[in-house]
Image (tube, rainbow, N blue to C red; front, side):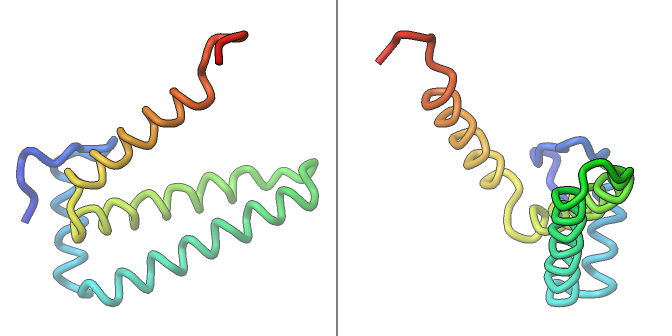
Length: 106
């Protein structure tokens, strides 16, 4: 299920095997729902931080970012990590072109 050519994105092959096993055990539908839940929790963590940035809630943001990263990696395995990486590269190139122009250039 995990071809060698899939970019690791910070995950080891062994970690990808664990994520693939989770997909097999719980199924794609359940993991998509879990991804949505984790994304919502991250959104709430950011909103709490935004409302009161002096609170030490950065640990909660880190926890939720990690949860989202795990779930997003599973979604990459489901929907095609190489294709996702191609689009990410295109978006970063576009960002570089749009926002990283030398000052004074048009």
